[in-house]
Image (tube, rainbow, N blue to C red; front, side, top):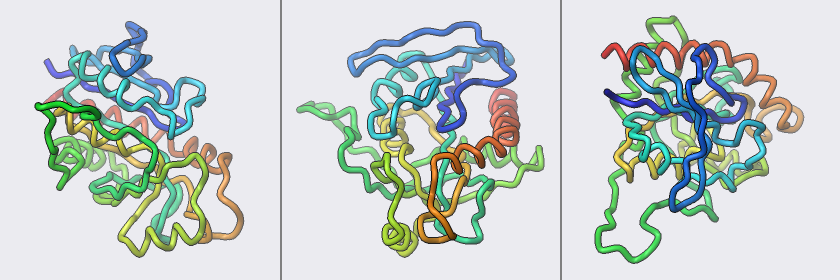
Amino acid sequence: MAKIGIIGGSGFYKLEGLPVIQEEAVTNEYGTARISIAEYKGDEIVFMARHGASHSIPPHLVNYRANLKAMKDLGVDYIMTTAAVGSLHMLLAPGEFVLLSQFIDFTRQRVGTFFNEVDPNFKHVDVTEPFSGFLREKILTAAKERDIHIHPYGTYVCLEGPRFETAAEISMMRLLGGDVVGMTVVPEVVLARELDIDYATVAVVTNYGAGMAPGKVSHEEVYEVFGQAKVRLQKLIMAALDVIVDG
């Protein structure tokens, strides 16, 4: 029986519509991760708020290794995640969904691998296609069945944070082929690959990148737009659960 994990990003701090049957702190050699467990159609759903229940953990301080190892130790086979992102294209408007397909990594201080010491069993993981084709197909099917518009491809550029980007950085990322920018999906997606866990991300566009629209990028704007999209996002996640569980 497959176990499904969900990691909620900014603005997505709990499972709506699924009764939680257990909450616990899972400790491993990398730290402690707080999780909630619900049951849906006979399958366990393991939920984790990436930034903590009160959004107290900034992106560069998230313990990605503890979180992913906790999912693995709990027997999770598939992880769906959400992420608030900035748009790098004027035609990709705030409120729209993007199913990530590639990433470009500009993080600097994070431990991005479980192989961080001498280990004769370390491996070079292939990330030609970093996001799970299986999960991406299921999410696209769910979106079509529920008539939820989602862009089927998108290249995510990950920066260290927690500051927003400069206008020059936004211009550079667009020239490099980026579609959206955020601060959390890397190294999460890489760690999932090292643990052989299927991983996919639904990104919610909350703002245009710096310099693309009048005014400044603000934390409040991100929360406001994400809040407006949250009902559709929850609907999509539940629909994807149906598609995965029902096979």
